Length: 209
Image (cartoon, rainbow, N blue to C red; front, side):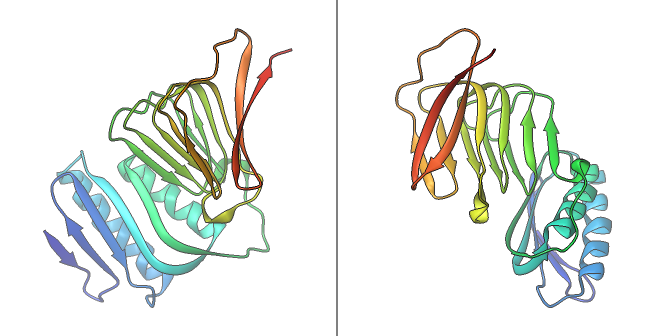
C-alpha cells in the first residue's frame, strides 16, 4: 500500500501493521506536520495496531521541533512510533521537562521498538526482542534483556541506568556498544549505570544509600 499527499509533502508506504511516512525534506515544516497529523489519524482510526515510522530524509530539525512532532504523533499512535533520519540543528531556546522525557509504564515486549529524541523512563523491563533508541539517556526500573541504545546522533553524557541486566542484552552509548554474555552478579540494594568511556562500554555497579 502506498499513498501520496496532494502536494507530495509526505509519501506513505506500508501494510496493515506498519506504515512508513517519507517526509519531503523540501516541504514546509508546517505543511508536513499538518499532513502527517491528518493522514496518521485516519490510518490509525482504521488500523489501531498501526506502527508508524517517520523518515525525515536527512532534514535538519531543532530539538524542540522534533519533541513537538513526537508528542503530537504519540497522541495518535501511542508508543508504536519511530522518527528517524534527521540532523539536529542548534536551538537557542531550551525545552521544558515535559518535552524531554518519555515515560513508558509497562514492560516492553518482543518486537516492540521505541525511538525518541527524549530521555526514556521505563517503569518495567526491556524484554528480549524489544528495542529502545534515544538521543538522550534511558532509565529502566527493571531488567534489560533486549536492546537499549542511548546517545544516538553523538549526544554527549548519555547513560543507561537500570536495576538489572541479563546476559544477552545489547547495550550502546554513543559509539560504544557491547552484547553482555554474562550478566553482572545480582546484588541487593544496587543499580547499574552504563556509560561510554573512550569508545568502550563501561558497566558500573552503584549501591543505594
